[in-house]
Image (cartoon, rainbow, N blue to C red):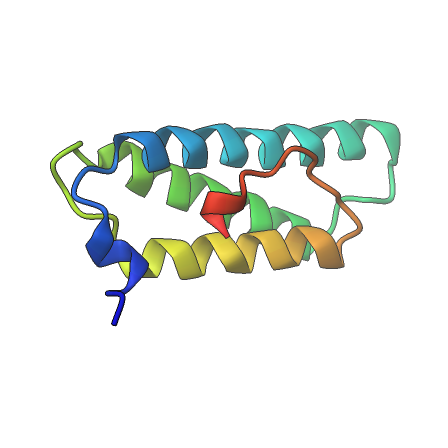
Length: 98
């Protein structure tokens, strides 16, 4: 039996860096869409940006020696699903994060 993903990682440096890059891409894509479409901004977008910022802060707080918390993966998946529902398509997403 293969242990859950969050237990297999002994160090989170690579995953942390990938998550930081992807969260930045999500944020930039939202801000670009907001600039190009004046009707894009709504409460769901604001909540999504808040979720992205909250997860980014939590990811930044991780040390390399810590194990990647399983809740972080679920939060990332929720953010990804919400971006898709809003019509955003973050390209070059790292498959290790999903």
